[in-house]
Length: 427
Image 1 (cartoon, rainbow, N blue to C red):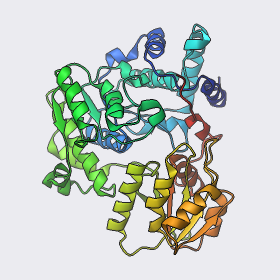
Image 2 (tube, helix red, strand yellow):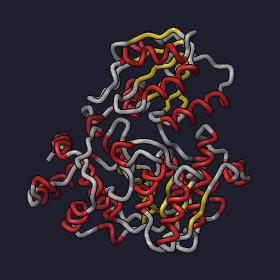
Image 3 (spheres, one colour):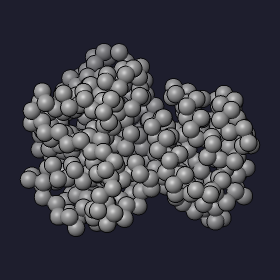
């Protein structure tokens, strides 16, 4: 089986959607000898900051000399980004070999419990991390937590970065309901670390932790202003990233008896962390400054706006903006449009894209002084904005991935693999 054939098979699994529940994942993992039982995990859930916190934890533990697996989603450009060991993505040959191995097992499942794309990828990651003899795996949830395929593991620590209103049609329409789903990753007597706020899920998380006899560490902005973080010279911009770093530090300390890490490794790891597409500054060959950030929901848009005004108080950029129709996009426009003097609205390369002309009234209302244009594509917007000295690209992470590929910030895979990020939930 070639890599292209493997990707085609994975594309076909999208037909099965995203099905909440753990039984299929457990059974599929069992067919490949349950590799999760020989691994150690830190399990990370939350509305925002999961990926950044995972990247920080991975960098810290790698600086401490461990062999570290990293499982995250969605990918920006290449599917292989999702599964990394010491920040080296799984190879195309390894993807093809796993898909060839797993293909006969898939035929053992009836249609109603057939493994979904995410379930297969979750087991692929477990298999890869076991084969690579990882000392520790930083393990990000996909959707929610309680019924997410990643929840078949028992970790050294459970991390819930924060709670916001997102995926409400599946996780619930209140902070408490969403917090209850994400708190489903908490295991008996396993420490819990969170930056959830009072009135926004913290009480629910604390209650579940108490029921599970799990020690809870709650992090707030005071923890993000500590001397250790000042010394770390965190390269990721924004106060919200300092809060994520404080969560990462608290997590390292919570599992310090099982995996001791010196303060020097914490500092080194934080100072070297990289996480593409999140407040990422880049320069084009033509000298244009580009800031890319996947502000795809209200909390992340508010974080981007605050960080942008703090870091670039006098900047008046052009902004390329595109969102998915199933997001709460009007508040996104209200938050982000005031940052720019010129706004170029684009479709996202996704079947769920919001037509850019529907964004037009919201952006004009939020920033009447800005020039707002509708573009046929991202390529069209990049061409129109080529002479702009400062360009902000934001909205969907899918848009960020396409931009990074077109700006040659990430290498392009053999075929367009962003379609593997598409999913719908089956009830």
